[in-house]
Length: 286
Ligand SMILES: Nc1ncnc2c1ncn2[C@@H]1O[C@H](COP(=O)(O)OP(=O)(O)OP(=O)(O)O)[C@@H](O)[C@H]1O
Image (cartoon, helix red, strand yellow):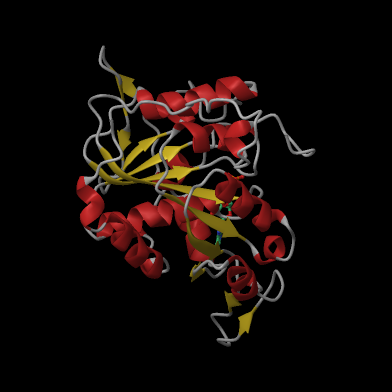
């Protein structure tokens, strides 16, 4: 046994004599659901635009004609329904729960659809939070989804770990601000995915720059970009560098993110289409 043994064989690749049979934490998709590709959107810390990138990816793929869904796994800080202007509550029947459908047809499930009031705080402990995410996978009826995007809770704690172990992710996209990129936070998120053997599709830098509408000059408000260096170091593609754009913030605040005009994530969409490719028939559903 290694002297650094963490007693967790699932996150260790050592073939030592003490190795125990691996536990299968995977959760079964609802039998009436069909989800082809599942992409997790992660960030090292909160507030860097993970929900925004999740929303824009779903919108971009939806515009390209794919049936898309968002599973909002950010249980304690759900911001997806607000960005899409969804105020209705989730409905269900004896078979399961139904996601809400956005104005342009994106299917969404979030704790905000279950709480009596949007402003209610979610005061649940880790295992309950993880349980809710699993139920969003196993108890919700997701009909013919080409791409599901999971807005992960920030960081590398208990709930992201539960998602990594219980939902069959086809890949993750890491979102970071320029400030995070100079710290170890991104590397930690990348390393967590690597440890769990989850493919990393690429990096998105949010809040990368601001283009002044008056003079046209570009300012790197949160510091000089280091995404190219970090991407080279981790051998990952850069999917996008997103500007600070008041129209984005306005669209989120007004629940109109679907109508934000822009093609900021077209490069990411091309990579996702390739990921879908002919493998689309190999559903990740059960
Ligand atoms: N590029 C941007 N330009 C303008 N506003 C932005 C941009 N990115 C994010 N915002 C705004 O910043 C706020 C936080 O973004 P978002 O909710 O996507 O972050 P997050 O990483 O998901 O945070 P948390 O993990 O805490 O939920 C939102 O109000 C969003 O509209």
